[in-house]
Length: 295
Image (cartoon, rainbow, N blue to C red; front, side):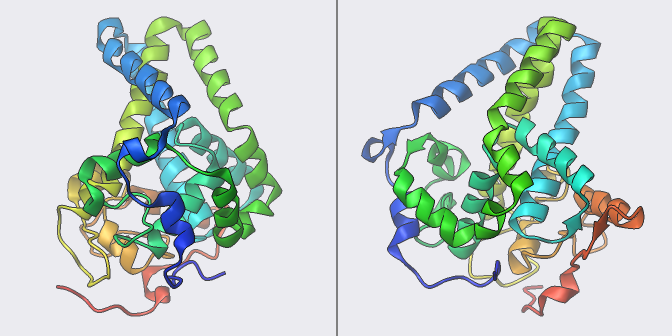
C-alpha cells in the first residue's frame, strides 16, 4: 500500500470530510458534550491544584501526547515509519487511546486522507476552509457510516487486518474510563482534573494546532503541493510534530527534524527503541526520495 502518493480526486473523501457549515451536518452530540465536559474540568483544575495532580498531568501529557499520538498513532500506525515489537507496541497503543483523540483506526484513516488531499477538496481539516474548522469544528459533525466503511477499506486495510490494532480500536473508551476512575478514586478530584481533564485538553489543542496553525504560519524547507509550514513552538509542545512542512514533504520518514536545530523528541524516542532492539526498519528522510527545497 502506497501511503505517500495521492489518489486521483474522487467524491468519496469530499462526501465524508468535505467542508460545510455546521448547519449542513447533523451535530455529533457525543463529541460536542464530551469536549464541553472535559474543557469544563480543565477550567476547574487551577482551583484544585496539588503537586500530585501536576505530576500526573506532566507525566501523562508526555505518555499520551508523545508515546501515544506522535509515536504510535502518527508515525507507527499511519505512516509505517518503523516497526515495533509487540509489547512496546501494545504500550504505545494504550497511550494513544488515553489521549482521547478517538479510536486508532479512525485517527489513522483521517490522517491518511489528509495527506492524500492536503489543502484540497476532501481534506478533513484544511485551514483554507477556516482556521476554526481545521482546529476542531470538523470533529463536531456526524457523518455517514456507510461512507466511513468505504474509506476504511480504501485507506486502512492493513490496520483493519491487525488484531492488536483492532483490539485497542474496540476498547478505546474502556481505557479512558478506567484511567479517569482510577485517578479520581486513588488521587482525588485534583488528580482527576489535572491528570485527566486538563492534560487531555492540552494534548487536544496542541494536536489541533498542527492541523490549523502549522498550515498557516511558519517557514518551509520544501516546496509541497499544500500550505504546510514548520512552526517551532508547535514542534516544542508536540514533540517534533510541528516540523510539518518537513513531514508533508517526506511523510513516511520517522524523523521530522531535517535540520540540526529542528528538535524532534519523538525521533529521539524512536532512535532509543531502535538502539535497544525494540524498533526496526526505521525509515529516515533520505530514504523517501528527493524533493525540491524551498530554501
